[in-house]
Amino acid sequence: MNDHCAAFNKGATKTVHLKSHLMNRLLLLVVFVIFASTASAQTDKGTWLLGGNVNFSYSKNQSNSSLKNTAFEYKIAPNIGYFFFDQFAAGLKLSFDGSGYKPEFGDGFNSYETLNVVPFARYYLLPGQKQYNILVEGMYQYGFDGNFKRNTLAVNAGPVLYLNQAVGLEFLLGYSTTKFTKYDGWNKRLSLGIGLQVQLRKHK
Image (cartoon, rainbow, N blue to C red; front, side):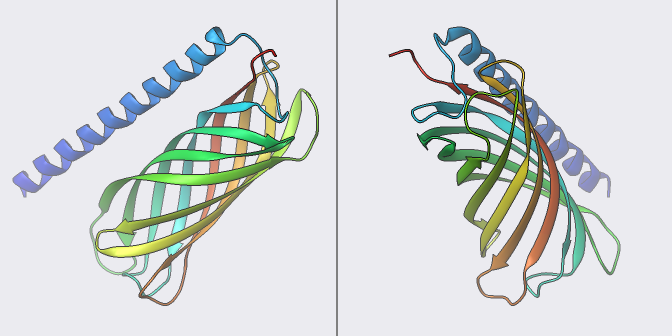
């Protein structure tokens, strides 16, 4: 029992250090971009999108892919994107996911962490430079949980409040479904998240 607790504590400590490292890198990236840029824009074609989100969620898994359980999960996801059209951007997220879950029947608490590359696309409903906007974002993720292949579709939506012409603070409500390829049923997730995005374009 002592060895098990020591191993669990050691793994938890590594997870905390890794999360802290990722958050520090993300913060440094945002600060660097803000001060190094020579011009700014919001949702115009040709603008770069840099930043990230921190997301917390509660899920109830009811598919036949595993034991039924409830889970609390978090996600740290720095991203880079590009506005291919006015108000429309697409790009990639590097998503670090962690979760802890308790089976519906029995005792015990389990946890695990994964790292994923996630393509995304988002659309801002209001044109031009404003003090606020509303975005809708869709994502797809193909990955593995142990030996199980899974497909995840997710949608986020919510307001963006701009701190200046380039920096936006996002508050997002999300919904996602996960399908394990060899099992019936879907795992569903509802989440709340907050993010910081920097939207930049050089002067021509």
